[in-house]
Amino acid sequence: MNKYINNLINSAGIVLIFVSLIGAMQSRILWLDKLSNGLIVTITISLILLFLFITFAKKSLFQKVFSFIRLYEKRIFWIFFIFCIIYQIVLIITLNGTPKFDSYRLIHVEDIKAISDYLSVNSNNNFLFFINYYFIKIFGFSYMNFRILNSLIIFASTLLFLKISKELFGKTVSYFSTISFMMFAIIQPLYLVPYTDTYCLLPVFLSIYFITICIKSQKTFSLIFSSIGSAFFLAISYLTRPSSITFIIAILLFILINLYKKDIRIKSLISFPPFLLTVILTLTMFNLFVSNQKIVKIDKSKELPMAHFILMGSFGDEDNRESIHGTWNAGDLKSTLAEKSKSDKSKKDIELFVERTANRGLARTIKFYGQKYFQTTDTGVIGYHRDGLWLNYAYSAKGSLSNKIQQIYYENGKLRPSFNFLCQIFWIITLISSIIALYFNRTWKVGVVTLSLLGGLLFLLIFESGGTKYMFQYIYLICLLSGLGIAYCLNKFSGDIDIQKEGVKKYEDEQTLNNSSSLQRRRNTRNISKRSK
Image (cartoon, rainbow, N blue to C red; front, side, top):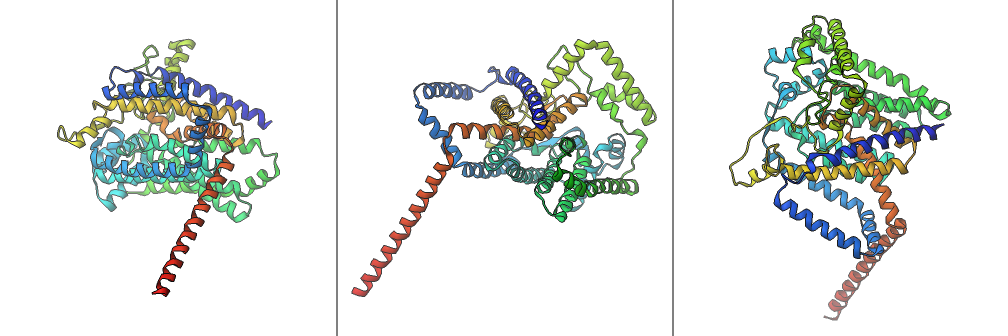
């Protein structure tokens, strides 16, 4: 039964990721017209060298390359991680961008009237506001403070992701999954936007980490403790970004399917009550805090209903791929806010959604959601729609080193198309390796990861999205699959790596022994010389 379910889930994952791959290959980011001359020359030379390598290199050389990567995967990872720390410090010092829209509003807590109106409509960001509010109370306000906070959250999440992927799939997968994750979360300057996209990572990963402890636990106390920890951080994840918790739905479905197994049934009976109670208590306590706090005045009658985000998710021109599809728009917001009560808002949104869908018809509706799916997944450049990260940039003096670096990362920088091109190439590699993982790995763990990803993609298809920025909350799932695919290829083409590792260890031990023997001989020689004198 589980075998067939895993095959079904993996097959659905392969199809959806393959569709994303088609979109990625068609992306205008790959067009050469805006690339720098240096990058075009580099690409040309690289293709010539690749041709020569494939043509003349012996099969044993390919195996040596893959073997080298496998043998020194740990060193490769930590060298890249240290590089990312230095890289991020340089970017923090060099890049100067002011966030716009929601992110801007939520860090400018001094305007109580404006923030009260905002939270009355967007109650899903209440938790983030209070986090920012108390952060400013403690550390004071500056954009640099928020950049440092965001960067620390990203790096802490990266290390936690390394630990989780190691617990689930082993060392090799963890190293390459985490490198893949860093390519999106750190190499691209997401730290500039202090918003739920990055803030949600840490509680999500903490919740998953406690779940991995729960899976391995054999003692009752450990089960209860890990289930409480997972539930608490799950609730925090929900408060930070409700759409980030699709992974728990996949896990619960897996448990339901496997309740016929005695060990899973016993673990569920022990861990589920404290898990559910912790989630309810955490959410209730926060809602009580919001109801009784005096910092801002929140009018719940103005709150946007869930149906509004479904309506926004249906907005766009299905005949124009580059126009917006399913993202925020003023027209839908205005029609929703015109209604007084929340129930009236919800009713109005549903009516408009049904009308819009009926006017499109079946074929054009499928076409619209296909365009929306492409727009959400067809590029590895993380941003809102096609508009980047929604920042106001400030350039340094022309000709300075800072200005040259800014030309790479700022959305209107001369070298930004070249940077996007490289990001897109890596995204294509990530998608291909994910497909390899899904084809050759049919375990229940891969099934849960894939089901979590499918749930997230389905959510983005139905609700507000329309840009890779919305997909970032699920990028770690794709990175896990990518790491599995890379590990499979390395194991496939590197030969018997255990024997090679044993040989390397033996060589290192011999070197250590020889060095020790040589050192001892030198000491003996010195002692004899002293005696003779």
